[in-house]
Image 1 (cartoon, rainbow, N blue to C red):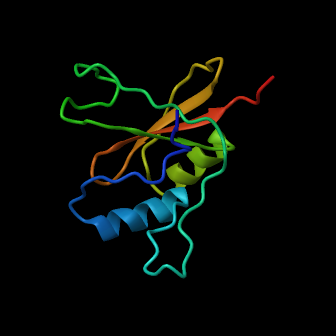
Image 2: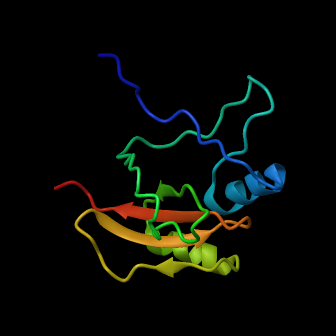
Image 3: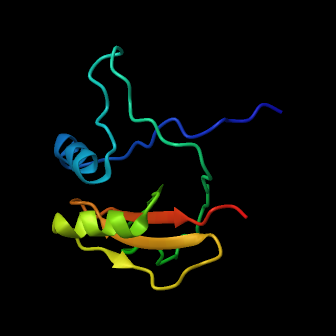
Amino acid sequence: METVTGIGGLFFRSRDPDALARWYETHLGIKCVPSSYDEQPWQQEAGSTVFAPFMQATDYFGRPEQAWMVNFRVRDLDAMVAQLQAAGIDVTIDPEAYPNGRFARIVDPEGNPIELWQPFPSG
C-alpha cells in the first residue's frame, strides 16, 4: 500500500491572511508562503507528528465552533514561553509533565488555538 510521507501544508481560512501569516512568522518563526518558486518555504525539523481526530463534542480546542488546532514542536518550551510573553502574548503552561513531554497553549490573533509541545528525548 502506498502511504503519505508527511504533511505538506496546513490551509485554513482567515479574516486577514497577510497579517496572520506575519504574526506566525514574527512570533513562531514560520516563514510566510513564498511569493515565487525561487524562494524556499518554511522547513520543519523531522520528528513525531500526531494525526488525531477528536470527538465532535470535545472541549480540547476551546470554543465549540473551533474545528481544528495545530500543535507545534519546540526545542525549549521555557525559552519559547518567555519570548511570547515578552511580546505580550498570553501563554497558558500546562503544569504537568507528561511521559511524552511538556505543553503550553497560546491563541493567534484570530482566536485559533495553538498547542506548543516540547517532546522529551527518546530513551
